[in-house]
Length: 63
Ligand code: SF4
Ligand code: SF4
Image (cartoon, rainbow, N blue to C red; front, side, top):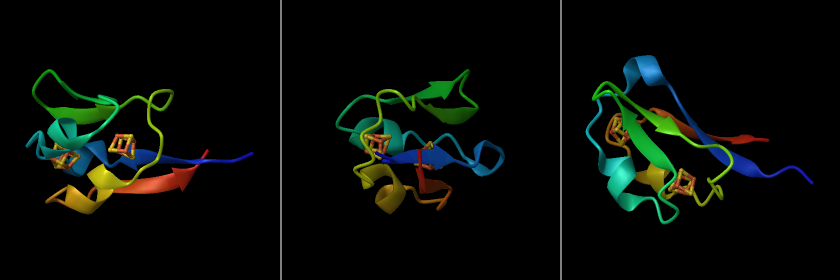
């Protein structure tokens, strides 16, 4: 069964870390201080990061 997972637009991420601090699964890391990377395997698609990203660059997609 398909499930929603989070995905971000890395080129528009400002590396603020809000998503990292709010993710209940610790699924997000900031790569070399440049942009957030979301681990698709760990993400449960709760949407908290999407709702709180100040740059609006996280979206839920069907996996
Ligand atoms: S959708 Fe939820 S579990 Fe997935 S990365 Fe965002 S906050 Fe974490
Ligand atoms: S909250 Fe948005 S802008 Fe900030 S690090 Fe996460 S994806 Fe990037």
